Image (cartoon, rainbow, N blue to C red; front, top):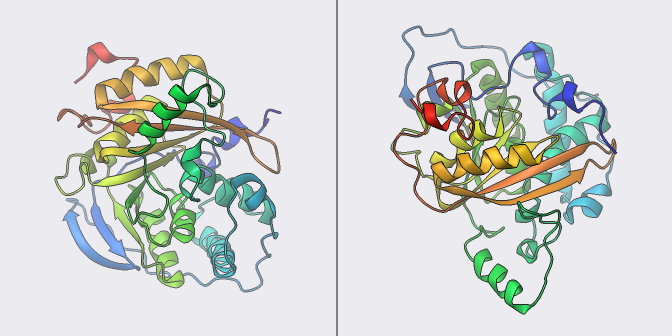
Length: 344
């Protein structure tokens, strides 16, 4: 069943506050941890006055529904303390919404489905020990992947050795995080991962810093910067194992943002609504230039509203050429796969 609201929601985030959720509209680069500034990468000629407001979560906020769909749809169930953290994140988001106008998704069940479940569906394959056995994985050329003979199974097993282990302490970056999704739910679900939440809109990072401080998420950090600049920074280029990117731009643009940041062998997850064969073709051309390949395409529906969704998994198989990412704004203006002859 097709979700009639998917275009309006634009993958649960792009509808919000009349702002385009894009990976960068500022020039300040400040990294924070636990709400405190720890590293300044670059500065803007025009320093902005920082926000001084403090979040006060409403203890009377509605309770999130106890969802058996976690286990039914993700084969994963939050522990009691993680469920409490999700509830705290919900209360803080409602409080932050009054100050920062972050999201229209505020009803408990809608928040659970479009922010929490949606965020973790993209990393489902990393949430449990048997993720690499296949599950509902779909290769780029077909609807589902299945075992069709011992030869193919052996090849798939050999290929999976390069995939990320769900229990490895690896580095994750959430590109264009907006109000903190999917990065904050991922940090809660996988406390052994280090998650950097990147956005160029300072007010959103100000909110996320306060959430991190309130919740004591020691494995989450924030960064205010344009992703095109971050991808050229020596300490961040090829530094991450997993890149998450949701409701930011067209798929080839997302690939150019994400792949330069990944180590060889790393994975990028593109969260999408509808998906077409034409999009697969243009994305394949883009990732080939960037040192990657389409590893899998997963089609699924959301558990409550039955909305159509896709997650596209890109694997980094070779270093990204030094000319990528291109200058600020160029990836979106001239997407790879569509404008390969006009690379700046």
